[in-house]
Amino acid sequence: MASTDARAIPYKSAAWRVTFPILDADGDPVTGATGLDSEISKDQGAFADCTNEATEIGASGIYYLDLTSTEMGADTVALRVQTTTSGAKTAILITYPQEADDMRVSVTHWSNTAVAAV
Image (cartoon, rainbow, N blue to C red; front, top):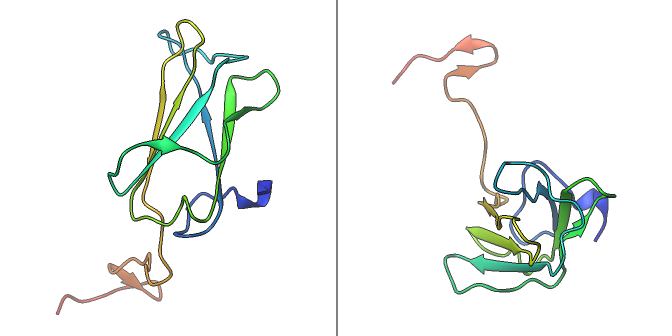
C-alpha cells in the first residue's frame, strides 16, 4: 500500500488508505494511542481483524489505516479502531465503496442548462 491509495472516494475491491482521528471524551485528539486493534465488517458480517494496523502520523492524534483490495470487496465496509489508552474512544468509520458502474451525475443540469422533466 502507498499514500497514493488515499482517495476521497473509496473504490470497491481496490486498496484504500483512510485517515481519521482518535479522540478522547472531550473531543481532543489522542496522541500515542496504545494497543491499537483495527477490525473490519464487510456487508454487515462479523468484525474481523484487519490485515494492517492503524498508524499515527507523527504525534498528532491523527491515524491512518491501509485496507487491502480484498478488505474493500464489499458494498458496505465498517471499521472499528479500538485502543487500550485510557479515555480514548473507539473510532468508527463506515464507507460505501464505489463500483465501476456507479455514476455520480447531476440529473438537474446537463451542459450548464436546466433539463426539463420528462
